[in-house]
Length: 142
Ligand SMILES: [Zn+2]
Image 1 (cartoon, rainbow, N blue to C red):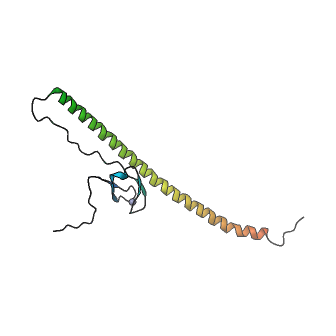
Image 2: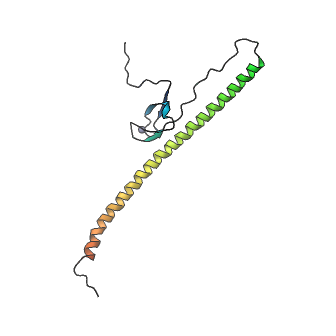
Image 3: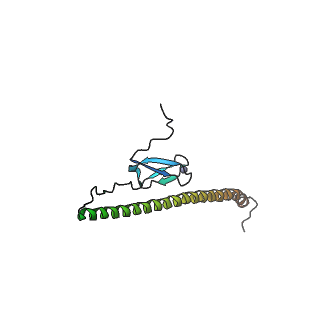
């Protein structure tokens, strides 16, 4: 039996994230982390976020009598893992902010271009009137 394969297989090396503009879900290889990719849906340039920290198996003592050195190592391990997760989460949140602001910047640039186009159009409308007045043969030099 074959299942409908309408979405790409997500492997362990893939980063899955949403486009901040159109919310389209994107899947890229982890090598693209931190790079800018173009959303296939709306062509927004998006920075690929870091992969969320994967769940690490925290070693747990199998026996009741555990060497205190091992216990201390397990605690260190847990602490490091918590800090790593926290920082990864922060990075992802900040990248999302950056992405949102890049979307806003792109919108502002579009608006800026529209204003410039309008400016040029108005100038082009005004210019022939001026040139015809200046270039009219009735103008006399004193
Ligand atoms: Zn998009």
